[in-house]
Length: 116
Image 1 (tube, rainbow, N blue to C red):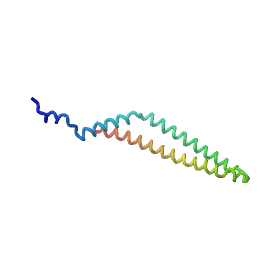
Image 2: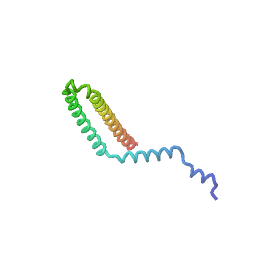
Image 3: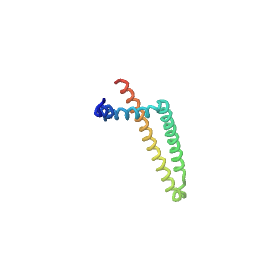
């Protein structure tokens, strides 16, 4: 007859086993994002940045053509829009960098795993 201790030894899950399973799950979830999908998102971010740059250029032209008589009425709104556009530029740059770093992390991890 099998002792209860030999059965318990077979049932116990080690911390290392849990880590291995979690790593497999995390890598599986991450690997669902293909390089083409990363590239598509990065391309769209670039397009949006270019459009935003053009919008800022046009906005500066608008700001330059506002006559002094309308400055009092428009100044706070113009400043608010300008600030919003500049913040959007910064946030897009941060997003672009985060996506780039995530892509780099994803694919460098996969290569390291394959080498092992």
